[in-house]
Length: 393
Image (cartoon, rainbow, N blue to C red; front, side):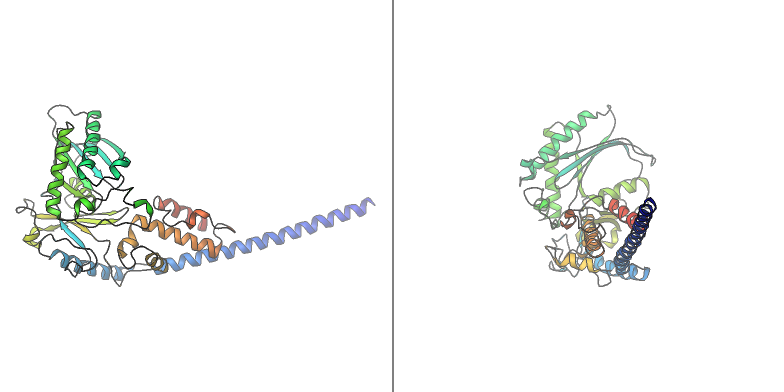
């Protein structure tokens, strides 16, 4: 009897092992099929978004042609950025910056900077020692705009609040007597251009300052007027330093690069939106576009809003086409939708969602958060690393 029971137990264990082995092989087969489906989706996306050198040259030629057409417009006209509605055959918004010179690397002293964004602003200070030496004594502080300032339509109220925080920042980081000081202001939206509102309620008029309402009419006069308001606010709060220019983010980035190298000729921002600043020989820019006398350096700083640039040679994928058609502005801001941070996050979300639905990337369920448009605006690189490890690690 004991031998019979032992035999039954042995047979049961054998059957269980066989069943477990079969289940394991079945699971392994499903895993391999899952991996192949995921890789198939990824390979298709990679193939459609490929940018071989000949294609890049075609895009570069089209961009150069658009830049020449836009820069040839007489005067700093207000352009609508819609591909020629402002009397231009160019889809680019190009403005001569209100900057008469760039750093040489010989600057010395303490310099302050303020970067004005839609919901907050950044204050920083740094010491420059000339001879292209490294920046030292770097301090920075991010300040959120309170709700009453966010809802304000008055630039004076905005700058008054900014100046009060700059005064506190300067007091917290005092400068010894006799040291030269300077202050620069940058704005995250292209001056003279309409700010782009993304497909999310987080950029509504009640939650973000619309710099376009302050900067859209006359780029030259608006900048001079706003500089006056900024400096009046700084004086009111006892800040003994003045701002001499108001520029876009990439113009500030280019100035920082030029401090270290004369060979730095352009700067590109790829954040919430995308824009660029670069230098042109003064003789290449129509005199009517200048903001002053002939620049001592012989070069003029040009800022360019290129988010609406479009080219038939763009590597537009199925994901890109769906994103554009479901956006609030189909057919517009195509370049921005291909490269800027906000849209790159959305592209990653859509690829992940496709993999989750068609290849069970996350198992038998699709994560609810992955169904929310524009939920992946920031730290996209972390998600890419995760996806790579999940597929090939």
